[in-house]
Length: 93
Image (cartoon, rainbow, N blue to C red; front, top):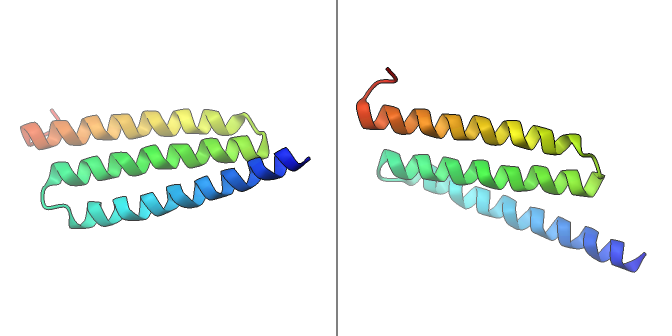
């Protein structure tokens, strides 16, 4: 019983810290002097969002949240590749 409460508090504190890191990454995405800096910041936000989704899956003990996290990770990866290609070549040909 006490172990579960400690685990719940740990998950909550972890989620709050990850949200704080997302906030700082958003600032970096807005202020970033170059486009690659912004792409990296958005990729970091995607990764932190994946962490929050997996924490939610663990807290609520629902496995289907992990499927959502996998789809979100694939979308983030494809977006990063597309933006990198656009920045490199100037087009998505």
